Length: 119
Image (tube, rainbow, N blue to C red; front, side):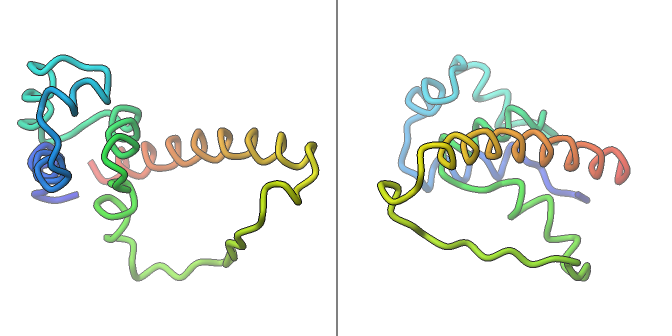
């Protein structure tokens, strides 16, 4: 991750989103004091970063932590196809929701492992 201070990047994204610190704190269920502490951090817990990513609608994991891996060519490619949810069978919807949770967990574990290797 080099000299990236994640707190400064988060502060910048909060400002760009035109949120007050109080509103941002409310969205991530933290106090204003904690938010200012986050703004000064060099590193951050992945779980908290995912909460912040969701609150700011910004993918910090991909944009900040993964670009260093840009030379790695994927072994697989995935295609995302948008479909009308009313046309999807009910069982498939449940499987999709379960898979989404599993994918988040696997991504969090993989990123944590990658970050620990870089440290």
